[in-house]
Image (tube, rainbow, N blue to C red; front, top):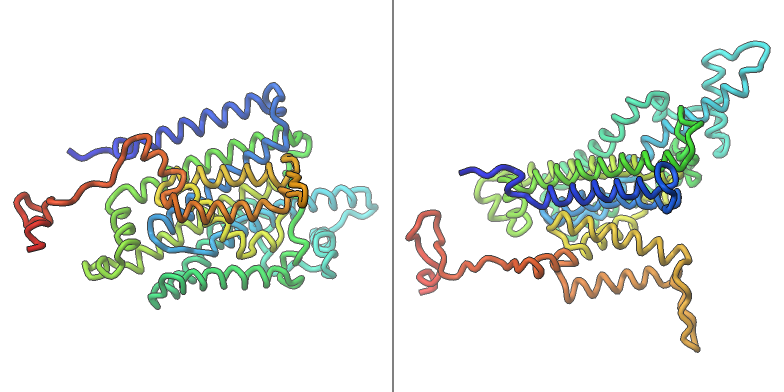
Length: 410
């Protein structure tokens, strides 16, 4: 009897229930819609953490299940942020400029209004014209479409070129890192059309919601981030649960054998690479309005390396492990780098955790790799008493009575 998706993946319901309870609890305790025990800044931190969990799921899908160690997925995350940030900055500036010109004796023409908006946005980089890439910045639906299309198309083109050339392993990782570095260096230029090192700022000011306090907006984004994370988890679980999931795990474990069996290895890898880029772009589009600013530093290769570290610590090949790793490291990073942990005096030297946090993170990654390769998620296997299936003496063929392992060794 064929099992349903829910029956084969009971962890999905558990995850969604925990996510729903978490979101409800934070909403009730928030300043904007609850009793005020959780500050607005911490609600934003939690909302951003949910977005990081979503991009960690994307990383786990492409690395933990398909075996593609991409060191460039944070580039897709940043591109999603830039796409929605363009509309946020344009619409907010349009409101400010329109209000300032409303008292003019002669009402401004649409071209004059657009020119004033461009001067306000790009004056900081010595320009007064809109670059071509801002052609759709006035339209929220079109920019939301670009949140999906731009990361997806970049991943599709890059993946097609890389996978058709059968670039694998560390060479593919280097290529993805080079792509990220090239994109970051391009965005640092003032003539990139995205304000260079200044980036896009003021993204927390939502057009049309000027009268709504940030305490309420932060809860709105928390809900949106939780919904996106829940949907992303379900999609990822669906992808890895059926035959498709078995094939991509086979590609991860023995690509040559899967190709020999007649599967289009490049097609499977390209689909996963593109899908996860789209998921990362959506996560970035929700993250940066909560952060309030995005600049090219966010796309630097080190960010993608951190992403791989989160997944490894949580336990790659386990979707919930990626969520645990991203949430744990994100919250600990906020705690250590926010000055909340007192310095540790050793007499001859004082450890400042703001400076030593990255060292601690790197050491944790090394220890997990050496002594707990299954990550934190592997602890759930120990608690549940799960073990790898014992194949010794089992049938090597699909039919009962097929050649057995012990017989094959003779």
